[in-house]
Amino acid sequence: MRARGWVLGLLLSASPAWSTPERCDFALDLVWKARSWKHLHDAWRKYPDCDDGVVADSYSEFVVHTLATHWETLWEANWLMERDPAFRAFVLGHIDATTDVDELSRILANAKLVVPRGTASLCREIASRAKRARSETQAVKKASHRP
Image 1 (cartoon, rainbow, N blue to C red):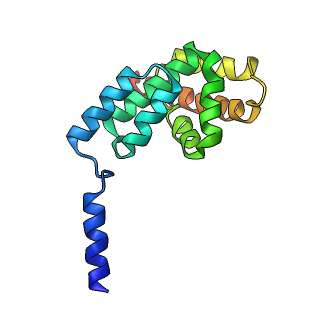
Image 2 (cartoon, helix red, strand yellow):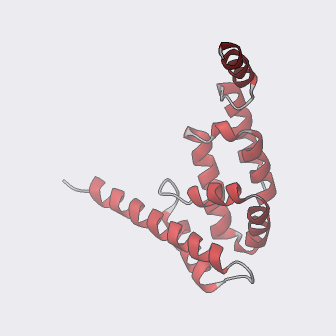
């Protein structure tokens, strides 16, 4: 039994899934260079352990900015999400209160008014996440302005 535990420990310690500052620097660089949903998917798949701190904020910025300003690319995101359901959860999880409230409002409008064929369920989820994130952002702003 100890031998199996030792082997498992050795395998886990050799796994690239342990984040290091260097790995996360590479992840951040890939996110900053991302110009498509495919690029984002590749970065996330290569460095899944780095979804924290500034890298996570960068993922959120990419997701929200792209949905707000390039809604026409939703088909690509949907295509990737259909093939990789974990990517769907990743993208939806990055529609959050760390992002721009105006972009969240724009996403909400897009998701309600421009629903590409085959994306109705995704658009409902996106709208729900954007609405929640916008409310959280507004609540934080309101609380920080209290005397």
